[in-house]
Length: 470
Image (cartoon, rainbow, N blue to C red; front, top):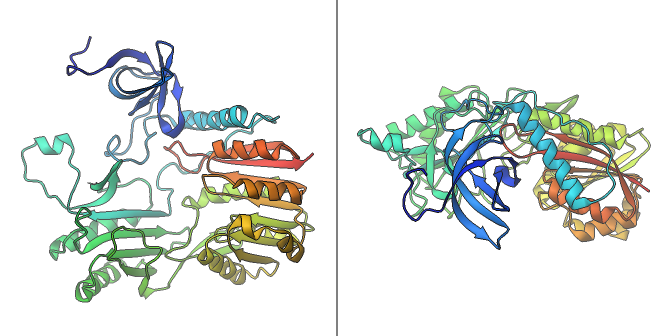
């Protein structure tokens, strides 16, 4: 028995058997399933503390001690591993991560959809496993998170931080010096912006009391070399704002779009705020094949640019377009997929809830000389009615890429009424995708499945399914 604190319910020498949803691990104890938080890996032998016991079916637990290590482990490359909430699978070999993600898709489709399935294709790996994101947000805070090592070394600690939120702690920020998610000049810009703000005595934001000056910085990098920096200030002190923006402009001439936001409300969300252009263009540009996509301060664009290309190629392949098809692209966002397939289709109609995204979609169609794509904003279940279909033509192929919650049931019913020849379903959540496949089974058969890894070192996985009318 280990010398743990009294009154803890500790289970010793558990064998980790597999990964579960949300990146937790699974073990078995007395006939019940144990879901374990912490940096465990299948094949580890561990001690855990039981945190909750639910209806004699499963336990919630956290990792206390590891007796032996799995052969599936890798050495984490980031000094913040285990504290930061990102890249939680650094300790798992990448080939094993891919297998776990493929298995997650397979399990969801078999257990939830319960429909006839083809052999699931191998997962498409990400060429880059570090520095693959094109967008990150960092928060200024006067309430820095300290590790036990920092608190125990006896030195005076600086409470200001610029970094990421600690998981489940909205008010604590982990100060970041080097992040392995976004390519240069991301780390250099963040570190020098922090040093400049400190040198000027600018107050870092206090999230408990909603006071302070320096609030947030958003960094976007593009595969064209464009760089966008958006600084959020919590106070309308124009002199200090100008000083900060002038510093960034002079120190980093590679910034092609320099903007700022004055956000005095109680949260960091900026989609209802005005982004003010200080220098450069109001957008950056991404390229995909022969297409150019403009990305503004509030635009949605897949955060792994190179892997988004691989994802869209799978969707286009599954659609099997010959140039004669009418295509509907549901949940089109900024029209990336719609514009990507437009040259292979007779016409494309994109539908999206967010009106600003549709503005971006139209701009992207225009700058790429795409004249056979039309875009509409509105709630999907209300837009897709008989009048809409009459005006825009009956779709031969529907591509749908809904949010994590999947498609609303009324949208599925509309698809069943429309009866397109093919449905290409792109999903970031194979569990809700599986639920929707069960609904669609009334008229459609699943004929192809291919997962795509967009986010190495996380449990997230995209999945593309081809459904063909029975």
